[in-house]
Amino acid sequence: MAPVDPHSFTESSQPFATHISLSFYLDFPSSTIHSSAVLTLPHPYSGPLSLDARTLSITSVLDPKTLAPLPFSLSQPDLIKGQNLLVNLSNHSSVLVSFSTSPSSSALQWLSPPQTFNKHLPFVYTQCQSIHARSVFPCQDTPAARICYSARLNLPHQLSAVMSAGHVDRRAPVVGEAAGACDDSLWCADGRVVEEFSMEQPIPPYLFAMAVGELGWRDVGPRTRVYAEAAPAVLDAAAREFAGTEEMIQQGERLFGGYDWGRFDLLVLPPSFPYGGMENPRMVFLTPTVIKGDASGAQVVAHELAHSWTGNLITNKTNEDFWLNEGFTTYAERRIVEAVQGEERATLNIGIGWRGWNEEMERFKDNMEFTKLKTKQEGVDPDDVYSQVPYEKGFQFLWRIERQIGRAAFDEFLKKYIATFKFQSIDTETFLDFLKANVPGIEKEIDLDVWVHGVGIPPDAIEPVSTIYTKIVSLAKEFQLGRMPREDEVADWHGQEWELYLENLPKTIEASQVLALDARYRLSESKDWEVKVAFLQLSVSSGCREYYGEVEKTLKEVGRMKYLRPLYTALAQGPGKEEEAKIVAKRVFSEARDCYHPIAQGVVESILSKHL
Image (cartoon, rainbow, N blue to C red):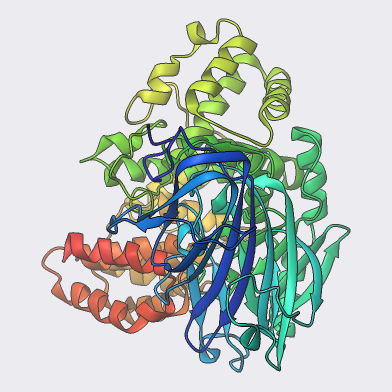
């Protein structure tokens, strides 16, 4: 008996479930879901079956055919993994679990009407990556396991649902279909509807996703519909931002092979969504902060689209191999951006990533394990060590291979890699074996061990070179000598150019310089969140108290961890003997906490506990 994953109770001697049938009764007043799950195994099995669970109240575990009780136990909670729901089977090929979620479920955020855009109906959504599906339903919550699923969602008739699955029907509830989730009287009550979904392609559990609220939509392409809260202003802005999605899908297919998921729909979530985007198949989740008004937010869509091949089709076996998802996807994203928006735009992307990667070296200076591609994560919460390293070091590794063998050969290699391992979960060693078999002698040209198992930045990683990139970095260096860029030098700059410029400034500058830069270019008022947050981080680190009000406003408007992490860190570290910043950090978090997703709450709590 050996665990297949440091973050799961799943044992290698036990069969993986192949299908889960879910019935959910969404109870908004109590912020819970009354549920049942039928897990189907590939063959009859006798012995213990371990399922991951977190903050679930288990009502019963039954044989779905006879409804006879099955012996089960629930372990004491582990801080990272949750609980082991251990079911004893005797020649069973399926198991029925009835349960309820907790209001404190780490995957679910329940928004009250005042927290939504229209402010009169509630909203709920999931975020299951990395190990949070277990707080929605019991499962083998490891990316090594791949499942198909079907779901019936019972919800108030004023609301509608989307899922990472095909939509089957919206209809009245039927007696007897709750399957133990709740009583028929509740399931079939007046004012309730059932929405049915089916995912017939096997996905890892972290790609399970749903959202329920007052949703509207706009079609933006033959296989893409943009969903958001039913507010014309939000929907129209999203439709404009993502109008070029179909061209990106076609470029992805040209580079990586056919798009296997049918539809590529997009859901713009409320501002509390903790990530830029989440690559849920058929229904990508996005933060509203990517709507910038100039279509540059489509680069986040390019990243999530690229996951359709690298991450969703081929998945890392455990979070220790996370770079196989994110490094490949960052490479693929930049190839799509280059094809659609040009080489300069892709180079700016690489340059921003290069700066971010270098900054992570400082963050992990006391724990260099997490500057490796292949990491050891036993006893480590993957949310705590989430960083740019698997994205940017992974990208640079693949870019290094491309430079070695040439783009044409590398493109052929990528297509073969995807075709070989599609709908499988693999580890780093499997990739390296495939690389060496298909690119003979590559280990003599590139030190694969240094790239995969070495700490820090390998000596053959490179900073990108282009006219615009070099100009921006040069202007940032001149700022250190007291020269601010002239208006004619920045006249054609968009968000990415300003973001790169700010990232290349010193981490602290004189407060007078911060004020002068903002007086000329109004960066604190930027509609591009990347620019605004980069500037506010600089202002806090430089002890410029004039911007504390804007920092507070920002931290209360958005829940995206990309913005929360640097701003809370800058406040909590407090430049010099700056206690005021630390007081602001604690007060703002106490006031804003309930508006953040549980994952983001945990990240901010760990920042404050480390520095305060």
